[in-house]
Length: 118
Image (cartoon, rainbow, N blue to C red; front, side):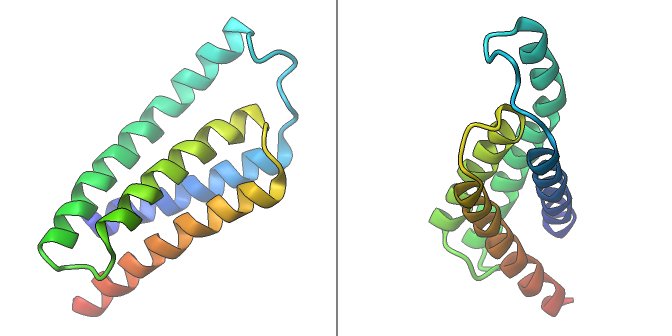
């Protein structure tokens, strides 16, 4: 289950990166229609990362994966940041890519650990 969710996080991360790179900044950050569209599109992503964090922390506790709890929590925080920055395009590309790579690093560690066990 964690492996499956981690794959989904990775796919979502790549889709968000694509959105960040190809989208223009919104005309107004206070546009209610834009806000509602963002909320509808991102709610499933926030739910995904919440479930992922729960399962990943359990796997850390059970010593199924070799990452620290802090890395799992940071990955959730970073993922939530790129969700929002992918729509509002309000940080520099360098910073966005740092967040993007940090998520990839932890997810890849989890995938590597879990695939070696099976």
